Length: 275
Image (cartoon, rainbow, N blue to C red; front, top):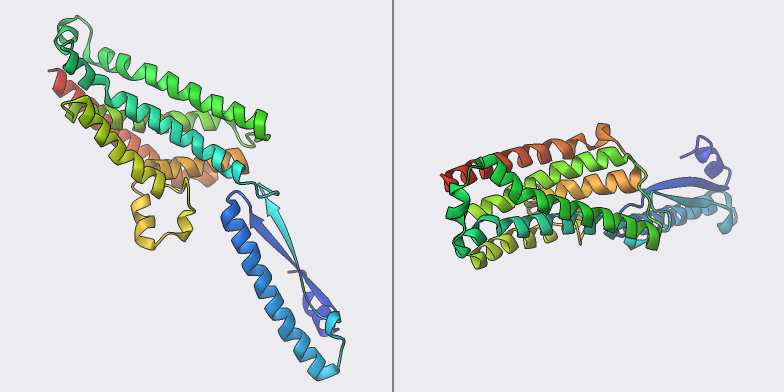
């Protein structure tokens, strides 16, 4: 609101108001712009009526001129919102689902005992199980990022190094969750069911499809238990807004705690299963 807004209104002129909108989520941005426009129109009608009643000024000479400015996604394209979400979803899907089969597949094939009697250490065996899926998920994430740049012109505004570091942190939690499923499952079918049981709520509660702000409060609270929720906010913050750790720390801390806790638990379960 400029300093001369009130003066212009009192003179019967149109007062200019600038509306700054976060366009990283087009659904919320369009809703906010529409709602602000409705408020401006309502206030314009009220001011115009008052001025006409008091001074008899022309109806079109007064009111509020709302001028929206959309940041981060000026065209409010949905694809700019979806591409970072797809990166997070694919990376979680691959690491969680593939790692969930790591131990249970060996058990079903009868080769787990052969691995146990080999001279390799437990941590080496666990690393061999999760490292290939880490590479696969990383390549998939980079591929989607490149495709978004080539096909839709989406560039990473923020730090690529920070994005890579926090992606590794997210992968650590997803790998740990998949490995934990693998150690408690008896069959591949059971591992698949448990993985899907985790994946489906992640899609619905993380904000991948629907803005979390539009969900009921209890659903928003449940979404805070999903690591994908924090990673999607990190992805969109770095890719679309170019923000750093000084802004994203509220997402980084719970994601780090989750990843550390789950990976530690899965490593302990893996050690116990091998022993």
